[in-house]
Image (tube, helix red, strand yellow):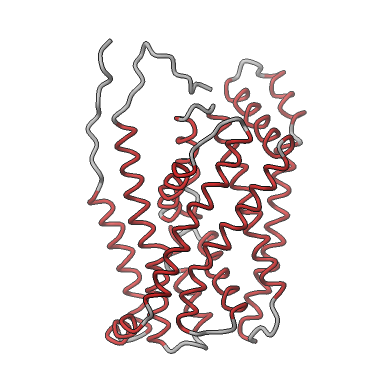
Length: 341
């Protein structure tokens, strides 16, 4: 039997460099409008490195925590993936999340990874869909808890946290409704099968619904554990922004963490990849009353570096290495492809 052909694949350095430079240009323009770049460079030199590297640690450690969210769900469908593989996978998925609108690009990579590991496409999609809904449910719960438990909120921030509370309640209602529609649609799928019993898309959708029912209902204890892990992921992730704000000494610790959550939520609902512009503008508006222009610009530069630029560089590198590994392997025509379905 001949050896499988090996494809030549190179890291798209030019594309990565272009993306990085365009993002940097947007950041420079925003900062230039706010303060003298010389003053910003001076403040960057004065910022305590302990807070910077501490923030970076929590942002990257969140990948490990988030990997366990997917790991919990794959185990619920009878499949095990080593935790370190999930951590690197989520790092690469985070890269796609940051460069796609509404932070929605990482899920497709996770589906493909699980598909290559032997899961059916419908089951892999159910794992990612259930995990995504669990993550968004936990994010809404975190926003609701944080914004509702605050006391002595500065007057200029009251409207923002009120919007977070209302948005979180609406978002929870939408997520719960979606779950109910997916899990309670058995009669609808049976109607489809009577009309198109031989339709492959119809069978795929039924397999997806069955896998979702297995994960969410039959394995409900594991699914609730997944929600807890997702909640911890966001707690860890937003601790990075919290530490950066701590370096500037703004607000009380509780308000400081709530502001970090506010900054983290905004890009998720932005059609602009990574929330570029939206995030900077929100930080400008919220912190304008407590930080001088040069300090505010410094915070934005540090924040975007920790939560956007460094994760993009690391995640993009991981994705490139994964793609090179996958491109070097093909399934021979005479081999049985166990991933069909």
